[in-house]
Amino acid sequence: MGLLHTYDVDLVWTGAGEHGTAGYTAYSRDHEVLVEGKPALLGSADAAFRGDPARHNPEDLLVASLAQCHMLWFLHLAGADGLVVVDYADRATGTMRVEAAGHGSFTEVVLRPRVRLRGDLTPGEELDHRLAGLHHRAHDHCFIARSVNFPVLAEPAPAVVTAG
Image (tube, rainbow, N blue to C red; front, side, top):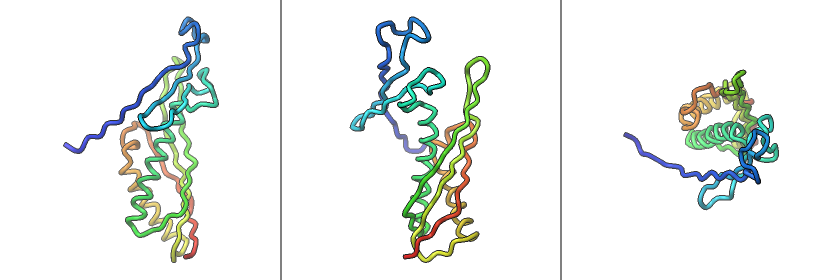
């Protein structure tokens, strides 16, 4: 059996107001996600589900977790492969289907990483193929992507190379 890691998170609902859950519209979906030694993360439901659009919602955080995990593995693997990444950004999109009965599930998450490298590299198909392999390996290593039951796709943009 492999190493076990645990992650403790406290969740505190702050939206009870005066009436609690007396009715569907009587309470706020606001809550705080607390991890010891870290700033509180203000959460709510998605605005479509009566949440506060100014706060993070679980769906956003799931997509963000997948993008973060992929990026961290990609940076590690790129460095180990001798590539110097100097900029990384991603515009990830998660798609969720909600059924008539109100339950639903994610159908996919698409990561769209954009990478800028520094070094004596020639932009083009060969470099993009090399990076695609690293993205594939990052996906294979990502703990979060390996834990979900829907496809997590990577559609990387062609790499940008800065000399030096």
